[in-house]
Image 1 (spheres, rainbow, N blue to C red):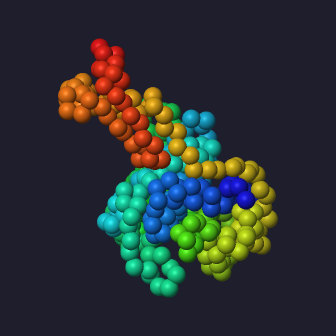
Image 2 (cartoon, rainbow, N blue to C red):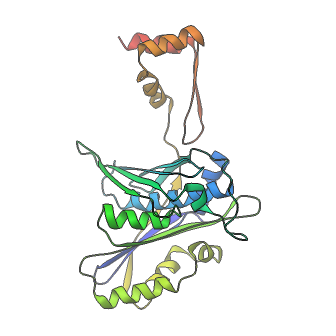
Image 3 (cartoon, one colour):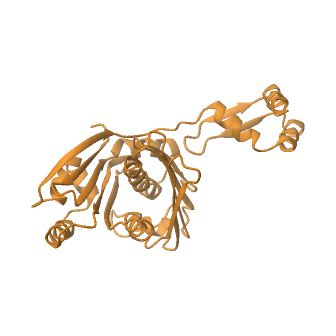
Length: 293
């Protein structure tokens, strides 16, 4: 089944929920970066949340960058999403390995660390991007997003993110949801929602069982009248190209480029997000320097 996200709301419009199936997205990220199971889980959870948060943005060219930097051995997790829910991302240390929490349970928190920060940059086409920052609360990713929404965006939210890695390291199931309360939500709705959330199975288990985003919304909003408003296909995809990489070379400045010419006669640059390699030979570099004026 292709990956997608649905958006739904209750009839009073006091709750909104986004539910995502992202198994293919996370598997493509794993193949691209050859991540260990715990790195796959950490990156996959972040990609899922980023895709949903991308869809929360309204503008055609809006862009979202999320950086989670904890004190664990994985280093940084970086993801970028657009307003169509298309994402790219990487981890600093894709080879990270930590002991299991218990049989079959990956210890994402040990890999990410439980101190550090989550930074969210939203480029909404204004003069300055919006920058929100909050400290990591657990390193489990979903709890960290919940804390970020509550403190940086003053938005009460429940976030569930899950990645189930198979014995061959491939991604068996991945997805998640973000449910948010509007200011005028009634006590009755809040208590129904809290009861439903406390009785839920883990999200990766639900997806492994074949539950769709529609099924997940039905579980979260059981006993509450709601309607599904939108469905968006989402995917992992890098938008790098030679022109963009060339711009990165130009930012090095003439002196550095001349040094590269003298020492190596060429430059090879890899994209962090997809590992695509771009080669610039002596003539290419000379042309870039010449065009810099």
